[in-house]
Length: 255
Image 1: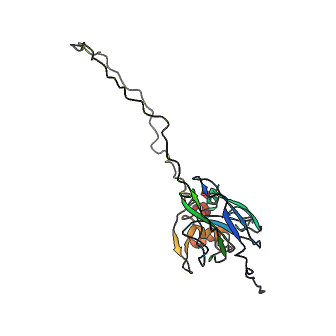
Image 2: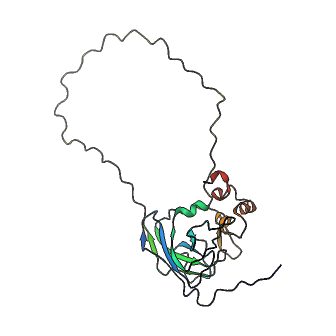
Image 3: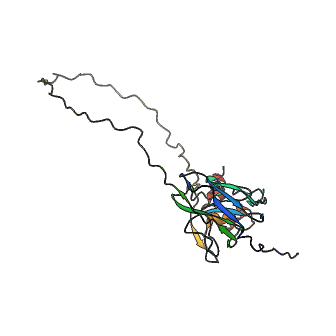
């Protein structure tokens, strides 16, 4: 074995880092564009979206985001074959946060509901996320458009008929037809042992969470994606989340 040292971020890194939404408001289900600029490029740095009252620069550490992407890879899958890490680095650029993060196993929040949000950039890939910078400005996501009927109802006529029919039949037909149907068409019997349709896999992740060792709220399906360096399949089995987080752990739900 050999010891090694991981250096701290040099002084002034956080104060020189900038992250901001490219727009002040977005339509419902619109991709969120975020620009960033940092003094040093690090692997696995990521940008996340938060409700404006859930993360800001006054906090000691930020919680798990509602959605995120790596700064250099602009995705959640990374660029490695064995893990979802992003080895690429970047000191500036623009990323797009949208429903793609759901493909990696946590389509819990997309589309984001209407409200006020901010973005934060984290240098740490694992909790606690203590080295971060959040945007000072917030942005809005508008409510989805209301459903509009495809056609208006027909208007009610303003003029009623001036009179009713003058004649009413005084008698009914004297007899009904005497011929009755001789029988119903035969129908072939359906096999009684036909196989029933098999239910498909439930491919919706559960949203359960737990309290971490440092008092942070963590979500199980996020833990599968981001905790440690074990392959995702190992983490699924380790934490028993194969059926709770099917889009990451259950092969029947893979694209």
